[in-house]
Length: 80
Image (tube, rainbow, N blue to C red):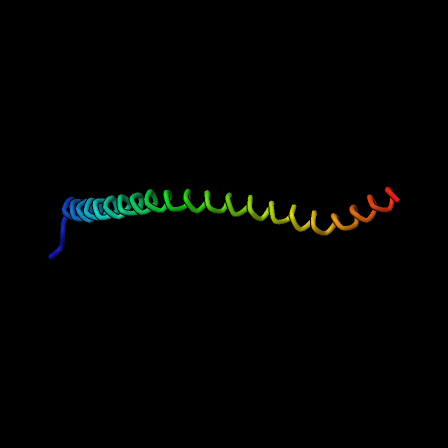
């Protein structure tokens, strides 16, 4: 049962077309998933920015607390 060249081409084209349709559905689902996760990533980015601001404030507080006693002592000595 030998197929002619034209039949082989038609069969191959049919397989390619069915593969393309399956891939189109797959890529559509991937795009939907990416869009859903994009929103989640944007929210996470906002939360990380807020956390970064809080950490920056904490650094400033720690540095101030470390140097404030020394500066206070120096100020007292100058007053005496």
